Image (cartoon, rainbow, N blue to C red; front, side, top):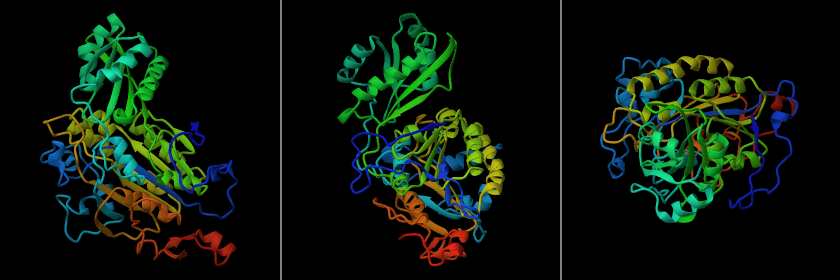
Length: 449
């Protein structure tokens, strides 16, 4: 586990405090009988539910990740079905009149883009009006010259490429020359692949830090990604040593606001990298979905008050980009099978939120890139009244809902979805649930509005 300090840098926090409490609530003794309020926000990376109206402008025609994976014989998600996945507006196959156990909505991406960074930033409240730069023709010399000079190595490829194909096509020459394999995709990424026997992983990370320093301003890509691999020519394999070096979010997010309010902000998976550590109090990396789910189960058993923000990356990395429909379906079925364990560990004040950051239709053959799609939102908890919130205008409504649950007013554009859903919970005040034992001990206390 990594403990992160308040990051230094260019982000302006406005009237947010510059100094935070030395100890978060997870480090303090739990008050007897006190029900801590926790939100577990899980991003099923790339699990889109149908193309947005502007999808053709992004090169995506008739894309629908959910439709594609649901056609697989490996697709079996009874618990997501019960929560209301197929009752979300616009989802094909919805059974009219069928009940659901969760608050549900179809989320629209207001930002211009369809990549991981922009999608997560918008979930947390930042809408990107200008897309991050992409390089369909490769990176210009004004980027590559200082990179060569500072690393002392040459460059191979410098084109958009599949990550598995690029090491097949350039891996042998890389091993022979020591030149770095630099490539990109339709996303705003600068990726560096290197064999661990040629470039040790820590050295590769240092090269990525150099690239991150160079790629600013008009060339400020969303992520610089280390892609180590092993093996012999004809049998190269990427390792789990991938590491993302992201730009710092350019504004205040729900993570900053939660941390400012003294709440815990726990990052599981690549959340730490996506937000460059900003607003995060604890972080743990994972090797994939299975470990990410296990870490979530472990945090459900721990005492903290705040947000546990989880990214499950395999849907996108292993199955979406590789256009593996059955693999994607099996991964969703595995997550669905683990949901009862999550439900069983949830306390009376806990809320579970499920969503995605973009699409990556594994049946779409025009490209191997992300797809511009609506995403699902399902919110479940003992105090959450099931309702259908229709189609929302922005992913930022998710961040606003998280803050709303803790009685924090968002400083970004976003509308909370708890109005009418939380008010019916026993012990609620002003629409926000109050810990039962706390209300009994101090009558009249309520969450700040």
